[in-house]
Length: 348
Image (cartoon, rainbow, N blue to C red; front, side):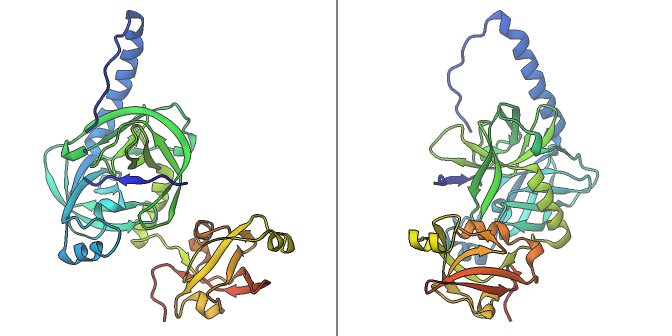
């Protein structure tokens, strides 16, 4: 079961009672403090507070979905190129009519949206300023549980707030507000609060290893960051295309449990699959002849146990490429040829 998340858009943490330290702990404490302070000195100047205003139309559209119809909001971000490109969360700037960034030197500068990817909850904005301090991006693939990490952001508008903790776990999975799963998420106990969204998660050497994004409420110490390797990949596509291209079939569906005789008869890997409940007119699925009630069990020989499996497989490489769907229809197994389209493109 995927826990309920709070995506942070607009926060402070309460610390518990402190425990007295013995004299033997002072050198260790000094080393810990120096690591945190050094990382903050390195990355802090690149962290920005982001303020967003949304149009009336965007607020009306948000009110018809699961999104909260705020007139505006704030979050965090960090500059990763000297010419003003900054990373933040998609939910911070999504449908923004106006974006402004507050720099550490006191300046407030306008910013433009370069690209937005709700499926990974990442976005790139460009600050209208030059010669800006940029962070160094690290490598999230070498992280280990227990490793020291520092979060920097603007919770509840308190600019450049710092919290520290450890990597609690790796490889977590969270569901974005778009409905897609975000894989390989970093779990940390470095306190995050509303307004930290989009800020950097940093290692002890001042390298950004994640983008802070969500907390689980009402739990404490369960915070999450998108790994920087994912952010680097997504940012490159947003800069080039303004979006991340993904393949789509044009179907809606839900998980169904298959009866054991069907699983045995078709030598299936599992007892769940994806039942088609909607086929969009003019979509690749419609052209391929998919019907409501069809049960999708495989895509290009990869087993499908639900919509999340299909989403993971529908990458950019499959757009416009003939593919194969294994489908159960009326108890019979069919092989359907289909050419996935690009997600977000209007069918002819």
